[in-house]
Image (cartoon, rainbow, N blue to C red; front, side, top):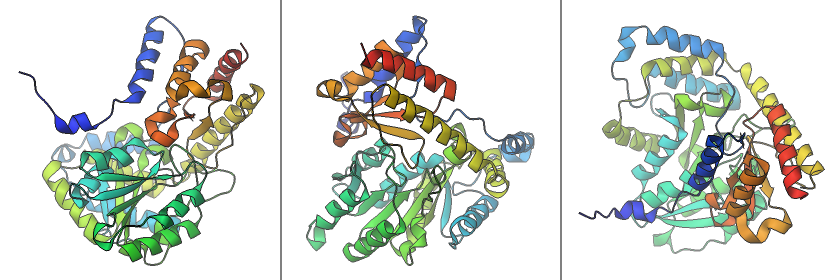
Length: 392
């Protein structure tokens, strides 16, 4: 029997799979491929977090089902994290929920909030799930340009015109931004909150790269804007700040009606994160802020090695203020063939894997994304391969 799956058919082919296959084929042939594609942190999780996981995992009481919204002590630490970092009060009972990573939380949050046909505003390019969660939920996407910076996106947002009955339901923001590395100041959020209040939007702000910001800059929380909790929720991932990518733990905080909706949906879908992981996450949030500057400094040094190295190869790329990525416009002589073909060429001729910009949306075409997930020596090796390719 020939089965049809209409939802799956709405999802475009996964562009990154092409690069992954080329990378795997090359490695099977014994080639050394330097993988700067997926934003998969290579740094180890700090010892106190790992030690607490081991201790908690040995306690059989922690082997049972947990709570889908997160154990109480974890939600208390989420609240304390906001107070310490941003001077913001979060009620751990009604304004915070633990999620199985930010990606799961974001996807289910969108599903909980929309009906098929609703409009969702997203940056273009964007982290894929920011668009595809809305597609999966049957929504219409409104894409705003962001490559030229936050003012470009805000200007496009100002100009959106819909009748009151047809206003978009959700505005997705994420700063520092993946993949473009765009960062914003508080005034951006002030205007976004004002627009959301006026038009009836709900803002979902993904703050995954809250700590990965360089050169004395600081990434604001949307909740530093008075009244933002009336129209917004914010998501955070433990993956980057604490090098806990594979642990799959994050949280969502803010508007209590929205948190209640996500809590109710998740109660049907999961029994929560493995309890020892939640207990270890308490240690991360409570006791491990001292490791964050060390992690950030490693990414900053890698950024500098890559940017300077690309410049010596004749490829001038702006130095990002934040994230663990570099968003690079393709050299002019390769631009016509597009980002996917250029990414293929980097694997076959330079031995370097990157993410093609088209995988992040239509306006990602013409760019590639480097992830800073190899050490300085490997990045320098990648530069040598790139320089050879560009100068052939």
